[in-house]
Image (cartoon, rainbow, N blue to C red; front, top):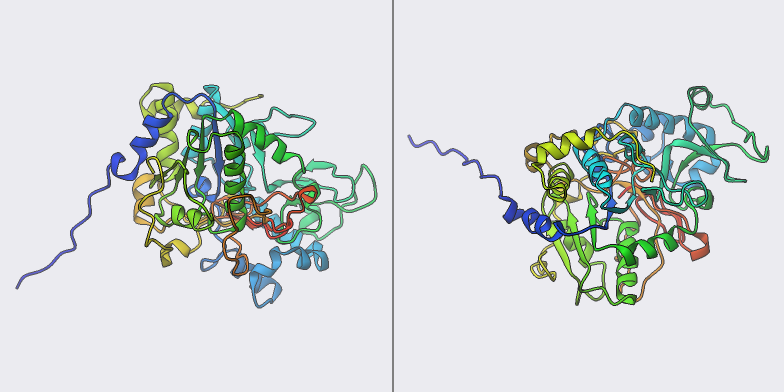
Length: 437
């Protein structure tokens, strides 16, 4: 009797995944602009949104609602603030237990080399701070290295005066006991978690309106732009890409400034390109690798060392103050069922599918963004993806850009720009539907 055995497929080489092309293209770069989603926190230990036992299911059971996603909307939050906050406290606890991934450490290593223009994260888990990256603030720290587009589960904010305070142990106990916490600065309102929710009516205090002014300047100075661990299934992330594209076009650098999409799923680039009305002159590379594989390799290449050396040097950083060209080959490609499945939120939720970097990641489902994010306004030369009702959690978990795939990602509210807000995706429609990405 002949026994047929499934032959184990060989691991794709760096050249086959596009990683080698990325490393070669980035070798001479000095100002990397990096966007990250839940994929960066996929191995940090964050919960997923829609998988069995995930955040949605837990919310559904606790609040006896038909759809657990409802808990992450501002409409629900308005009616049951204290109950919702107590649930978010569980996410915070997860974020506190989460550990920075090799990708986070490599990001810190790139910053330590002085080659990071800025890091924009859709995650709300605060893990960038854990590896020593300073957080941007329009007044307190305008040179901060990480800009949290969807807030942070580790902080509380007053919706009236915008005063921000760390979520300390005493405050956490009060939140769990469902006790209102009056702002000690203005005494006009109660504190809330500083994370973006779908259609957030208080988005202005989650993310300042001037973040896009900073982004425009960063895009002008960047010599390469990376989109790491973002699935582009949510409106927020695609809106950010189109905005960046608009800035590049205005400065005449659309064809010369290299961009790369780094994600294990082949559907990510398709998702992105399908959200743009014109893909001509786009210089976007597709890198089919996990953040834990690509980022350490990139840090090592920039430092001129072996990947292992770069990882150890990045982990030592504890404090910081300051497709080949074109897009050919995406025809006929569409999202697969695996790519549409949810990935862990990288913030404060039960680990998103804890996967060991590289090999485990390749044998598992692709990381999908699951962060909260708002929907941004249309940008010339592009159009928003056909909306089918923004679904929460892509590169995110609630500690990652509001809850996203391994790190919630949220979309920053920008009332001045008339953006909608959403928390998962990311989604900011008029600043309101911004969850994981």
